[in-house]
Length: 113
Image (cartoon, rainbow, N blue to C red; front, side, top):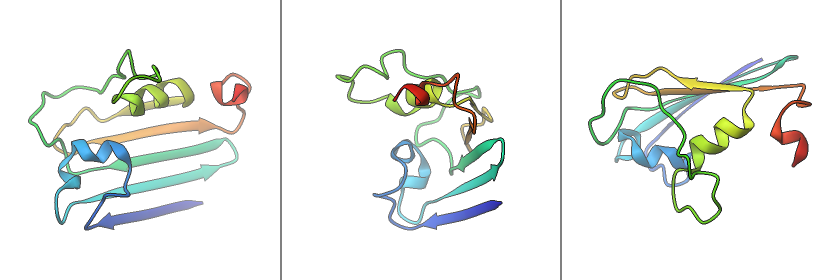
């Protein structure tokens, strides 16, 4: 089934990556879409774009993101390590980040946690 939820207003409890976006500003919002099938789960988060102007292009995880001593950059690094597939639309003014988590986790780091 498909589940969709749009959040508005104060986002202090929203996904941590949103603090880097205009969605974190007063009155900001973001949209989460989840689609579950027998093959797995697909989630997309759409926000209102970067706080700081950025060039077009896909996001990349921080190479130090999985370091427990790192103070930031963990979100995309965890996504890269644990998702079956993930990506984004490459548009900083209206970013869409998605991931797919396969129902069969035999070849995924989740299986070892």
